[in-house]
Length: 173
Image (cartoon, rainbow, N blue to C red; front, top):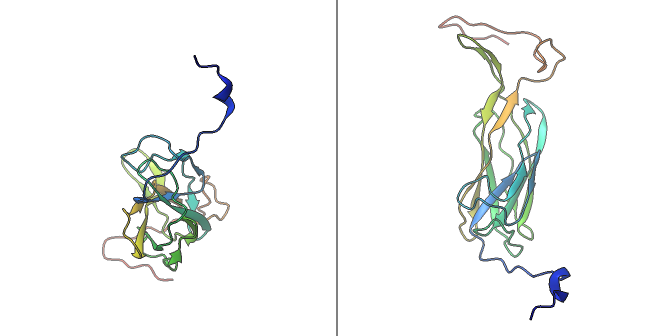
């Protein structure tokens, strides 16, 4: 019969082969083995924090197995690409013990008004890709809301002015 004596002992987890890349943004924490296993929301706790345009922030990329367990013996070169067409992409980084850190600065925040709602912020995504080494499935971030640069304005997001252009007009610096 089971005595219960082993209930306080740790059970070692042996990870499977590295299969994909995980992107962890500010506001998120890696949680090894966390369900669901079929999309980019698994393996993490928390919600990605909104960022201000022009403000640098930290991104962690991990090599993980199918069940979001970090694979420490993975050393591929990783490129991080954003959906912001005006930013400067960070340089390629090497995974060390299955992880690396990037710093990115998104520059496109937006402000627009639809028929009923004043909306500020642009949504961007980050993608991590292997550029050298054994191929892994690309990592896709959670959406990153990017607010216009902070300037202490009156709308709660830092905007202090708006530029309205008519069709055919081009902004001048």
